[in-house]
Length: 116
Image 1 (cartoon, rainbow, N blue to C red):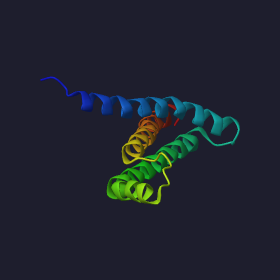
Image 2: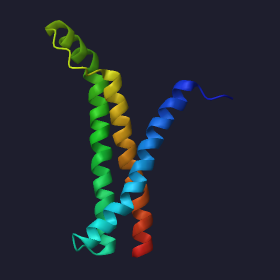
Image 3: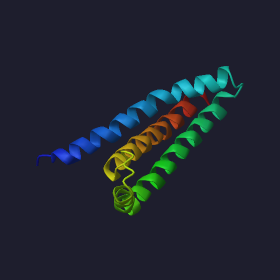
């Protein structure tokens, strides 16, 4: 059964965020150990919490975009104050940010188990 193009596009969007978050996690952990003086396991736990923060903010932002997006667009049009913000672009941004947080949350426990 072929995958619809819209699903493929959304999957690529989230997967890109996951890949960036997964790549950023070791950098953050090493930075916390080298610069911050964290123990390696504590650095991995902090990276997990940091990823969880971004994941949670993205969920909140995405739901806000869905709930209020059309009203915000209508208000911009009515006030003739077009800022370029659209519901669709906001949802896309939140999907990327959520993917980033999820990528960090997937890689941080692996790093924690390697250094712990």
